[in-house]
Image 1 (cartoon, rainbow, N blue to C red):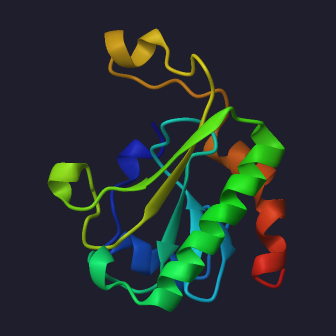
Image 2: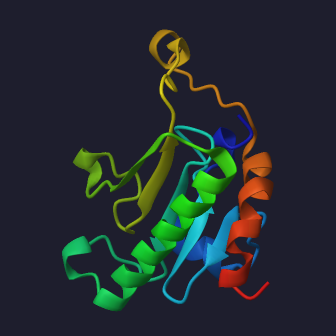
Amino acid sequence: MSYVGTGRPAGCIFCVKPAESRDEEHLILGRGERAYVLLNLYPYNSGHLMVVPYLHTGDFASLPADVGADLLALAQRSIAALTSEYRPQGFNVGLNLGEVAGGSVSAHLHLHVVPRWGGDTNFMPVTADTKVLPETLEQTYRRLRPYFRETDGD
């Protein structure tokens, strides 16, 4: 609940957060040249993260190739980190392009990487419209951050 009540900052959250250089506070795990990785504040599962280009655009079709390459390279690195740390049985990886497709911040592309396990849905979302996670975002951050240190010079 501490995350739900905080509200959004002025401007685009995916532009504001990396510009502030407060990576741990903003749960930014790692940075590439043209994109970065951060935890989702409203995760579907533990380890749910996003890969976000620094370029502010919602138009995937016209995304420059070098930005797309960095986006995918960081997605691959994210999957390797999650596989090593969490041992999921699969992943959902994708973009929600436009509000009608589920994009809550559709003006700025972001690629979701969601680790999955057999039977990982429980009764809480169905009966109480609530998702229960076994660890806090801070715990997830501490577990995954070491996998991204060499990307951003720490």
